[in-house]
Image (cartoon, rainbow over all chains, first blue to last red; front, side):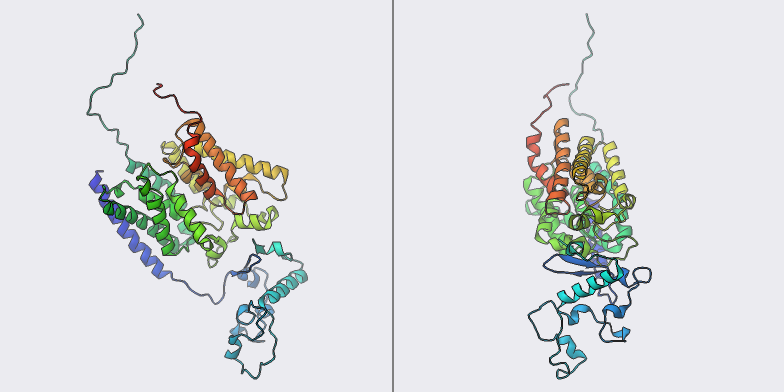
Length: 144
Length: 318
């Protein structure tokens, strides 16, 4: 193969692969999943990767949705993400704005909302202890 | 009188034996295919896009450089395409396009062109590109986060992160055979160990890479990891887990033996390979990074010219 032919191949390779790249990136734009597979909780003590699918599926741990998504009660169609109510900030005593999507401000005035750090620790560790399975120590969940 | 055989050298023109830089690079691309195809199989169309853009951008940067500097266009020799392929093999399938654009710029322009082009680079260009973007945007190399939406039938926790954070006891769920088959979270072209080995052996058989570097690299990993595991088995895992996780095999067969940044003499090659292996395990076991391959090879690239002086081949010896 001579130099000119090799050069021509390189030009075509550059153009074709660019088009392929653009098309695949456009076709696979970021999606938000209603039922996530895994969730990464980002914390200063090391991120925690939570395997949502394994916890929720029948062939996994078979945890019922309402065991964690406790609000609103008895309404599986309206499952809300934990951090939409339980925020990270433990100094902010105000209720998150998402509460007002369903409640009037007057109805929920004075309601205390646990921050996400306490909620996750309580929920995860309590369940793992109760079932006798799963990590309970810091270094068994937090990826440093 | 003893009849001596004498070597007779005629005047030019000589017959060309057909070996060319482009042939060498096409062979490297071919050798990378098994690992890449496995990456496409596991991570789908996103992986195809990453590899496509990486090759395209790499060729573009070299072309742009040759146009700006008014030098001869050499994109046809395939060396930039090889940089693009190897660079993409180290990326997660969810790498954003701009990360590839910046990374390939660093690899091709800063890693190679400013040193005079092909053969002049002191570091492996692909590694330099990855190292810079890894330090700048490390969140994209958190494979647990990057591959969070990929639904696979195997454990998708990045094995080296599990080992680093939770210790040797946490990796019992990973079987070595599964790791070899690519059933692990990782970069597009780094997960399928068997494919990388096949590609690497092909390159050794073709004489494109030197077995001394590859085998001494593996020996360095095995010996160091074994030593750690022997003295503290509760904290450190055995050598085969290290061999089939992270960028290890990619480093052994595609990164460390790069022509320009590795030694040319036999004993220096062995020292270079051993150094890469030892440093990799030291970084993994007592360093802060989960995978030490990139920095281990960069350090050995840096001291490569010195190692090459340890036992130089006698010049002119036939």
